Image (tube, rainbow, N blue to C red; front, top):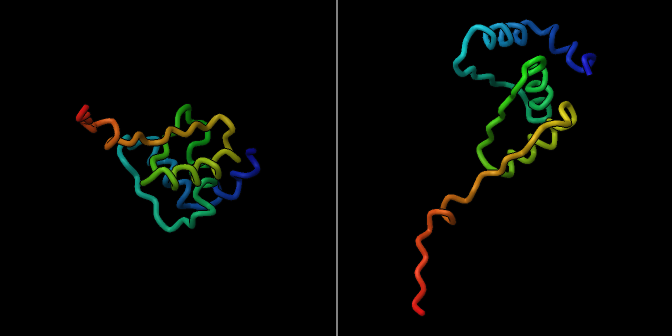
Length: 95
């Protein structure tokens, strides 16, 4: 698996992001990565870290990322969003 991350380590931008991840506990915005490369990039950034959390804008995109990411980490889990409208509904019967 380490051979898959070797090309990433050669990128100066990748090394800079890894360095900032170790020193900065806040958010880091990364742009310019095409969809087919995102799972590889995320896996490389998270290499050696005990926990990684990936947040997606919707369930469909989360499932796509999850399926791609599982190539790099078989222990990945998908937690789909709950339908808040359903859980917050106040239902009354006329019977």
